[in-house]
Structure formats: C-alpha cells, structure tokens
Length: 218
Image 1 (spheres, rainbow, N blue to C red):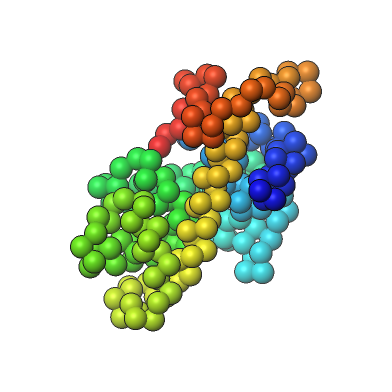
Image 2 (cartoon, rainbow, N blue to C red):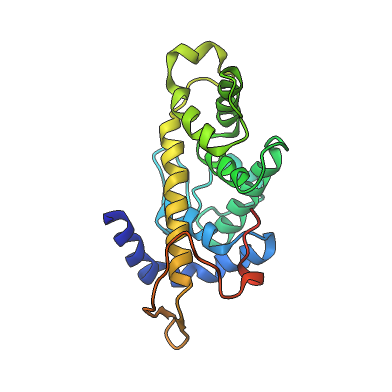
C-alpha cells in the first residue's frame, strides 16, 4: 500500500513531464506506453539522472554495453533512454524461444531485462529437468528463486543468480502497470493534465478508452 501510494504521488509529480516520450516509444514500437512507464518507474523512479553503484544509468537504467548496442550516446537523455530501453526489451522478446506465448512472453522478457537472458534460459532448463512446462510464467516464477541454490550450480550454464530479485522486479512492474491502466481509465482533465477522480473498476478489469491507440503488443 505504501509503495502504491508513493507511485500514485510520483505519477502526479513526475510522469506528466516524461509521458510524451513514453507515448512516442509506444507509437514507434507498439508497446503500451503505460507498461513502458511502469518499467521506467521500477528502474529509476522516473529520474533521468539515476545511477547505480555498478554505473547503470538513466531513466531505463541501461548498462554502457547495452546503450552502445542500442546506439544510445547519452544514457541520461530521457528520450534516448526510453527509446533504447524499449528496443532492448523487444530484442529480448525476439530472442526468447518461439514456444513462449503472449502475454507470458513479455514477463519473461522483463525478467531477462533485469537478470539477463542467460539466467532466464537457465530457469527454463530447471523446469524442463523437473518435467514442468518451461513456457508458462507461473512455472518460471517458481523456478527463478532456485537460480541461487548451490545444488543447481553444475547445471546452470550462466552461473548462480538472484532470481528472487528478478521475480520481484516483474511483479512490481505488473502492479505499477495495473495502477496506470486503472488511473488512465478515468477521465483526463485536459486543462492541467491531472487525472480526475471517477468511479473506479477493478485493476484487472480495465480497458483503454481508445483501444486502438493503447493496445499492448503482448
């Protein structure tokens, strides 16, 4: 609840400034802008100057190597960061096995965005070894925490990793995405771009007022 309240406050205080960049990337690449905004909040709290101790930087917290691959020359430029982060997410989706269907494919890609594609593929191998479907997100969510279990060290091609963090990462983004869908389903006061309070429906029963413009790719 506390995290949700802080998120709602930051929607008012920060998101309005960066919303055009998220919408621009959404239009360019076919991903719901609200999902991109949820990723941006999880990564940096919508702070384009954010920096981690490992020198991951910017709105979408790109590593230097990822920024280079995405042809981003300034990670602190919010427009470049959002554009590069979106293209990187799509690249991860394309590199996943074709057997993973949507929307699970997006959740797998988000886990890979956080922990690395190799570790996500390792979690799938653990599921295959256990005789479980490796293409279903609910199963992967069970397997991710095992990535730091030394019992599996010999079968993990990409080494041990903290899968609990990746699982929490995806769960938080999905929660923020639900909140944004819920909030944007209300009427927008055009004069000052504030969200008006209107009768709310359940978070998982939201439909955008303009489905053609906001339909997520996944």
